Length: 120
Image 1 (cartoon, one colour):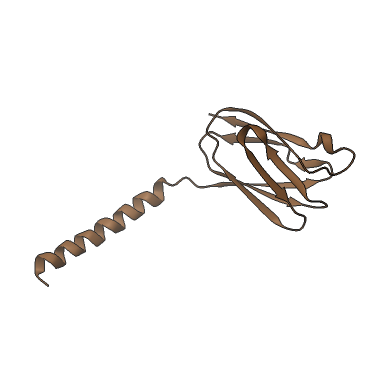
Image 2 (image 1 turned 180 degrees about the horizontal axis):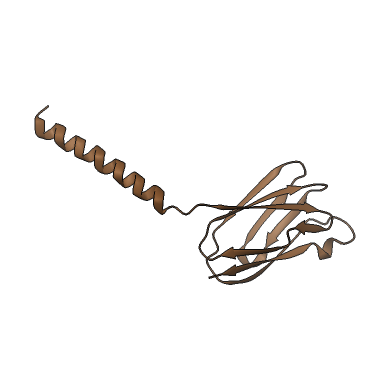
Protein backbone atom coordinates (compact mmCIF):
# COMPACT_ATOMS: atom_id res chain seq x y z
CA UNK A 1 0.00 0.00 0.00
CA UNK A 2 1.42 3.38 -0.88
CA UNK A 3 2.02 6.16 1.65
CA UNK A 4 -0.72 8.43 0.27
CA UNK A 5 -3.32 5.66 0.69
CA UNK A 6 -2.25 5.16 4.32
CA UNK A 7 -2.43 8.93 4.93
CA UNK A 8 -5.89 9.03 3.34
CA UNK A 9 -7.14 6.23 5.59
CA UNK A 10 -5.71 7.98 8.67
CA UNK A 11 -7.43 11.24 7.72
CA UNK A 12 -10.68 9.36 7.15
CA UNK A 13 -10.46 7.72 10.59
CA UNK A 14 -9.68 11.02 12.32
CA UNK A 15 -12.50 12.78 10.46
CA UNK A 16 -14.89 9.98 11.40
CA UNK A 17 -13.94 10.22 15.09
CA UNK A 18 -14.46 13.99 15.11
CA UNK A 19 -17.84 13.62 13.36
CA UNK A 20 -18.95 11.04 15.94
CA UNK A 21 -18.07 13.38 18.83
CA UNK A 22 -19.95 16.29 17.23
CA UNK A 23 -23.06 14.12 16.67
CA UNK A 24 -22.97 12.92 20.29
CA UNK A 25 -22.99 16.52 21.54
CA UNK A 26 -25.97 17.53 19.38
CA UNK A 27 -28.24 14.64 20.46
CA UNK A 28 -30.67 15.95 23.08
CA UNK A 29 -30.71 14.04 26.36
CA UNK A 30 -34.02 12.36 27.20
CA UNK A 31 -35.78 13.60 30.31
CA UNK A 32 -37.24 10.74 32.38
CA UNK A 33 -40.52 11.31 34.23
CA UNK A 34 -41.67 8.56 36.60
CA UNK A 35 -45.45 8.13 36.83
CA UNK A 36 -47.38 5.78 39.08
CA UNK A 37 -50.79 4.45 38.03
CA UNK A 38 -53.24 3.08 40.60
CA UNK A 39 -56.99 3.08 41.05
CA UNK A 40 -58.01 5.86 40.16
CA UNK A 41 -55.15 8.26 39.78
CA UNK A 42 -51.88 8.95 37.98
CA UNK A 43 -49.16 10.47 40.16
CA UNK A 44 -48.20 13.03 39.00
CA UNK A 45 -51.23 13.94 36.92
CA UNK A 46 -49.95 17.35 35.80
CA UNK A 47 -46.81 17.26 33.65
CA UNK A 48 -45.01 20.16 31.97
CA UNK A 49 -42.80 19.41 28.98
CA UNK A 50 -40.54 21.55 26.84
CA UNK A 51 -41.15 21.78 23.11
CA UNK A 52 -38.67 19.58 21.23
CA UNK A 53 -37.15 17.93 24.33
CA UNK A 54 -37.19 14.11 24.13
CA UNK A 55 -39.02 12.56 27.09
CA UNK A 56 -39.44 9.08 28.52
CA UNK A 57 -42.59 8.62 30.57
CA UNK A 58 -41.75 5.70 32.86
CA UNK A 59 -44.88 4.08 34.27
CA UNK A 60 -45.40 1.64 37.11
CA UNK A 61 -48.86 0.28 37.81
CA UNK A 62 -49.58 -0.78 41.35
CA UNK A 63 -52.83 -2.72 41.09
CA UNK A 64 -54.29 -3.25 37.62
CA UNK A 65 -53.54 -3.25 33.90
CA UNK A 66 -54.27 0.42 33.45
CA UNK A 67 -54.14 2.11 30.09
CA UNK A 68 -52.42 5.35 29.14
CA UNK A 69 -53.86 7.30 26.24
CA UNK A 70 -53.13 10.78 24.87
CA UNK A 71 -55.68 10.94 22.04
CA UNK A 72 -54.42 14.24 20.58
CA UNK A 73 -50.87 12.85 20.29
CA UNK A 74 -51.99 9.38 19.14
CA UNK A 75 -50.01 7.76 21.97
CA UNK A 76 -51.29 4.70 23.80
CA UNK A 77 -49.88 2.01 26.10
CA UNK A 78 -50.98 -0.74 28.48
CA UNK A 79 -49.48 -0.54 31.97
CA UNK A 80 -49.27 -4.03 33.51
CA UNK A 81 -48.74 -4.14 37.28
CA UNK A 82 -45.27 -4.90 38.55
CA UNK A 83 -43.57 -3.91 35.29
CA UNK A 84 -42.03 -0.68 34.06
CA UNK A 85 -43.57 0.61 30.83
CA UNK A 86 -41.71 3.31 28.94
CA UNK A 87 -43.36 5.70 26.51
CA UNK A 88 -41.01 7.88 24.48
CA UNK A 89 -42.11 11.13 22.89
CA UNK A 90 -40.75 14.42 21.65
CA UNK A 91 -43.39 17.17 21.84
CA UNK A 92 -43.61 19.02 18.55
CA UNK A 93 -46.49 21.38 19.30
CA UNK A 94 -47.19 23.77 22.18
CA UNK A 95 -50.47 23.19 24.03
CA UNK A 96 -52.39 21.26 26.65
CA UNK A 97 -53.00 17.53 26.12
CA UNK A 98 -55.33 15.44 28.24
CA UNK A 99 -54.35 11.88 29.07
CA UNK A 100 -56.55 9.16 30.52
CA UNK A 101 -56.82 5.54 31.55
CA UNK A 102 -58.61 3.65 28.79
CA UNK A 103 -58.78 0.23 30.50
CA UNK A 104 -61.87 0.14 32.72
CA UNK A 105 -60.56 -0.21 36.27
CA UNK A 106 -63.75 0.12 38.35
CA UNK A 107 -65.91 2.85 39.86
CA UNK A 108 -63.89 6.03 39.65
CA UNK A 109 -62.26 5.06 36.34
CA UNK A 110 -63.80 8.07 34.57
CA UNK A 111 -61.76 10.43 36.75
CA UNK A 112 -58.40 8.74 36.10
CA UNK A 113 -56.87 11.41 33.90
CA UNK A 114 -54.30 14.17 33.79
CA UNK A 115 -52.80 16.88 31.65
CA UNK A 116 -49.54 17.39 29.80
CA UNK A 117 -48.65 20.99 29.06
CA UNK A 118 -46.05 21.60 26.35
CA UNK A 119 -44.30 24.99 26.58
CA UNK A 120 -41.91 26.68 24.16
